[in-house]
Length: 423
Image (cartoon, rainbow, N blue to C red):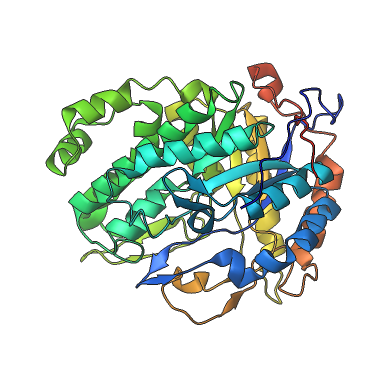
């Protein structure tokens, strides 16, 4: 294990030119356990070996923000036991390159010694990890403590695909409440170290459509349920049928009251993820298909913003690159949707193409170990820029000085990086 780098002071090295609008990309670091097998996307993409090269590509794009975090399952060895070697090296490199990390602490998986998201000890233990990370890297201001809480609970504990591989309403609610509690516990642990921390919740923005009148009630239920993780995270009251569902499946009145009392919303940005598969058509018998972007990002995000009233960041999107230029067309569609929200005076803070490089086996939601490369990155596996990467680089260069983030009027400052001596 490496030694803790020495903090050399608190004066900023970035200077006064702090970027306002957040153009970002990300390093895919999903690491769930699937049928007893750890799926490590950092390893699959080669990032664990080529991270220095990948960080240089981020700078070449013109991105000043990067969704990134060290792999939880190898960094967090046990209660109070951390191996910071990889984190120290990579975080120091980001500081030298003057790239703001949006630190992704938990991305779909936990260390083997935790077990899975049914473990009631996970939230408190994760808070200890978050505090230790913040103390080691006090210059970090931007965090996503737990990535896509809704999707993680859905895939792990209702669909039975990942981690605990359970398929019931009770296991789903158990995973969901532990994930939200862990997210909140992490925020409370980080704030004493970094009082101006900003938490960018990266949550999947979903929409369900009825294929016939017979499935209308199911679509309405799903459209209420999709808000559950954010409702609990922000202390938003749920509808009466949803409350009954929570009580029937293991959430106690005391736990719900504790979620309602949260005071963390003022530190948060509503990060929303949207893919062509985020809208669902429900058929009789429970079957669902992906009809494409029927409503589209802007329409769906208006619903989320109306509910929570928080500043917005588009934190994930991509599409498979093909000879028809689908990925490039999708990039511009997402960007114009974001600009539509901007023109409607919604507080739009940033945009992300996720991820930097191609991914592996996401065409089966990581359930099959095919080693199949999914060409969705800004760069391919040989680190050659894709057409969508060329267009994203151009988009950044053209718009970066045109769009001041509305965070300025909302008084959500993005403080300069704080220095730390690096040996």
